[in-house]
Image 1 (cartoon, rainbow, N blue to C red):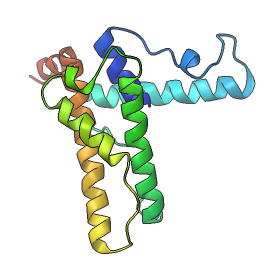
Image 2 (image 1 turned 90 degrees about the vertical axis):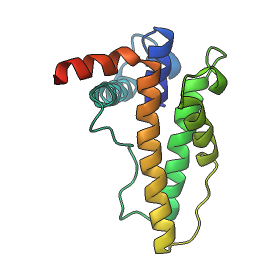
Image 3 (image 1 turned 45 degrees about the horizontal axis):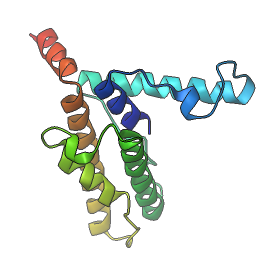
Length: 157
């Protein structure tokens, strides 16, 4: 959800208000404040990685986890991204630019993924989906916030 909210917020010119999204008041304490701190750190790290155009990775279980668990986590990640990006009625897949429409439609399909077997072929397919999602989310971010990419390219010269 963090990456979907980042992309959505940038597109709409708004800051992400995670306390409101999580139903936590501005005077959160204890466990609620700990959750907000973790979400804020995750959002900052994700935004920096997406901004830089390198180093962005999906937060998913490692290769040593069961393929069923990894498939479920990948589907959940895709679902969270799409739900956050398209919540409300301000953005629709058709209203996105360039290849973002196709990426979002593909993420909807990936969000419905169910674990297959435990074969090497399933392992390769899962790795390919994960890489597609990573690159696709980066593309959506760049298309929704082109100034970021232009600034990164200027700094590289």
